[in-house]
Image 1 (cartoon, rainbow, N blue to C red):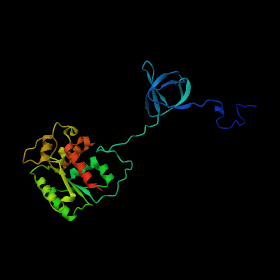
Image 2: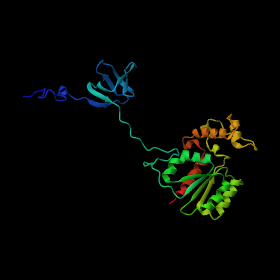
Image 3: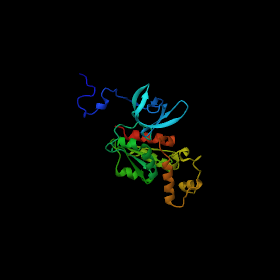
Image 4: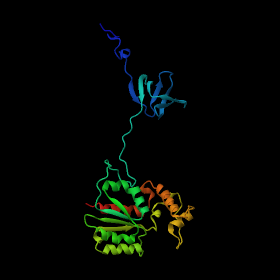
Length: 277
């Protein structure tokens, strides 16, 4: 004899015996849903936390909690949040594809020197993830004048290459003369010195990113950073003012697109040079 109530009245699920179980349906945008309790029918427009918003044919919108109590094509369903879409490959601030394994590798003997703390901070912000993935350490020089003695203290070799980024590397400048001397000297084979044409690394950040029309022209005889801050109406009375100005500029840099091409290509060149097997 078929007993639709079952033999154990205390068994779990006896109330649902013989009933068709409602299917789970993802509350995807534009899915047409009817609310079983009041007959409201509309398309899914958005999800807000654990609620779904429906819009009917006359534009009226209402929020309902996700779960049971809905019909799709007349059949009872349980509305659930759609599964998160799989993430595609992400990119670093430099535009490179991020490695799936983000653990930093052991530091190489080769490294990159940059002329100044601000330069090092800018390189770290845009290329930091790439450099850690490659195991490249960035160190800053107090000035390009100290480069030769730095190389003498720990000479480069084929297995320990040095890349150097210099400000204002233009023909006949002090920086270019130092670079040419080192390139001709005993360290030249394993050192790559490159630079950008700007007076200071601040100018490597595009005016658009900073929110200005252009970097100001600073008359000779005025410290460049001080002149820039004054021209832009920023405080420039003490070193702390300049430090705050730089932090403001740096905060506007989020990707390589915020930097001038004259810097981008040079940093990429140095990374390639020091990571040669």
